[in-house]
Image (tube, rainbow, N blue to C red):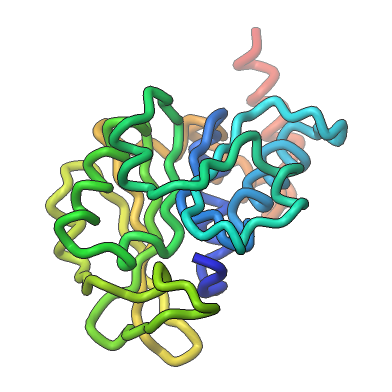
Length: 222
């Protein structure tokens, strides 16, 4: 979609940083928010890569070409101008992360569930932003019929998946929406930073025990 709620942005970025994907498919590119932010915090912040020659793959799918501008070409490796369901069904590409930022509610429920199934086959992790409940009616925006909300979702639609992480948010009108992370494997958010990252951060930056942390780290390196 063109754009969407902002209350979950920092949460999503923190989550993606912990997943540390090296290949991403962004479904429903729209303005390009997620591709830009993923590029910034995985490559600029994370890898200190200011060269503009990217080391990670970020592809996108966008069915409404009027949303796409010249700046998208800088942040995305490839943008496929096609229907997301058909793309996921046919592509041979595999991704570490498939991002569905306010996308699946624009499909009829049956097709949306197929899209999730295909995404889980083609991606190690699937990240979904989704409005919850029946008070999210939306018609066409910017003469774009693909902006119509065609399905209603509840949290129970996602708890049926074996490996899921669901976090709730409210928009500016106090309507509920969720960020959902799905995977065929157990979701481990501690792998990238290390098992004791939070504890070490508290000791070093809250309690002023940086010397103790350094001593422990030096012992572990021997």
